[in-house]
Each structure stands twice: as C-alpha cells, then as structure tokens.
Length: 251
Image 1 (tube, helix red, strand yellow):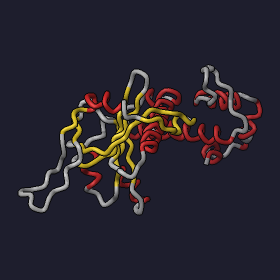
Image 2: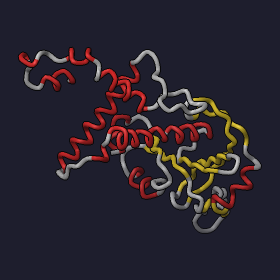
Image 3: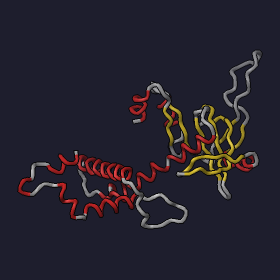
Image 4: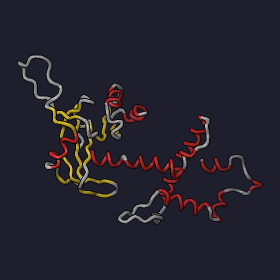
C-alpha cells in the first residue's frame, strides 16, 4: 500500500510515520528494496541500544571500516544526561503553538543499520524519544509530524465507535467490506459537512481549555437536520419515485 502511494509522488521522498511497533527493519528493509524513496519516523523503544557515529577511517587502517561507533547505552539510560542539554523549542502541536523541552542528536541504530536523528522530548515526570531516518528533518518537524499521527488514531475511533464499523453482524467477506466502505463514506460526508458549516457547533461535553468541537457534535447537527420537516423535501413524492432515487441523489 505504501508503494502504491509513493507511485503518485515518484519525484519526492515519502515520510512514513508509525508507532513503535512498526519502527523497525521489518518495515524499512522492504521499503528500501522498492523503487521509491522512503523515510521512516517513529517512536523509539526504551530498551533500544544506541551507538555513536562510526569514526573516520584512516588510510593506513587495516581491515574493514567500523560500521558503528562507541556504545552509548539504551534509550532509558541516556535520558537523564540528555535532559540537562535540552532546550525549549516552539512547535505547532495539537492545534496550537506550544513550548516543549527537547534535545536532538544523530546516532546509529543497529536494528535499522543506519544513522537516524534522535529527538528527546521531556515533560515534568515523563520523557519520550522519536527517531527519523531523514536526517534533514529538524527536531521541530519530527515532533510535529509525529504529533499529527494522533489524528489518524482519532479517525479510527470515529469509524469504529461513532459510526459503528466494529459492530458489523455480517460474516460474508463482501458484506464486511461493503459495511466498512459505507462507514468510511459516512465519516467522509460528516467531515465535508463540518468543513462547510459557517459556525462551529457547540460542544455537548464541555472540556476546560478546549474550544474545538468533536466528531459527535457534527453528527448531532446532521441528526437534527435529518429529523426536521424540510429534510423530506429532498425526495420526490412516493407516486413519482424513481428507481434508486437515494443513490442518484447521493452521487
């Protein structure tokens, strides 16, 4: 699927953003074997061992040049020392500009067999590390791109719980696919409706410090509009009903 997307952008490198489960050589190796340019951005596991960049090989050095530099330790072991070197950075995260304490450096990962840009983000009592094989990305870009991944997770929740794709009672493969396609179509229509309304809907469940509306708020607006008397004007009289009227209107 990634290669089919990259085919549409053959002149540009494709940045693949994943969680820590897919951030390994099992995904990067087949991507590198393809005809397209891919870069991987993921969260770093705490037990991954980090290495320094290999030293510059001298002309008189015997044997093969070293692939890895000095062993730096695991991600959890380096966290305390990196926090003392971190600086405040301004990033656009979750809808607004925020100040985060971060530190970045280029290290070697044995599980990927390549250099990566490692970015530490420190909070009051927690820390998290991200890495990217794209060395040209800045620390701010790495944080912002990974933060944007959460919109995909919220989209899964909307399709599963709000629309009901996980509640299918069908057992036939084609019926399951059709059910999922209708759920995604309903989610898309809801998003288009939310994009075109003039005033933002009021939140049903008010959250302190949050002004954006939720997916369920848009669904409630659509439900109110569908229950109104004017909604039935979209369909002709029953006596003059054409075949597949709803499908023709929808398309």
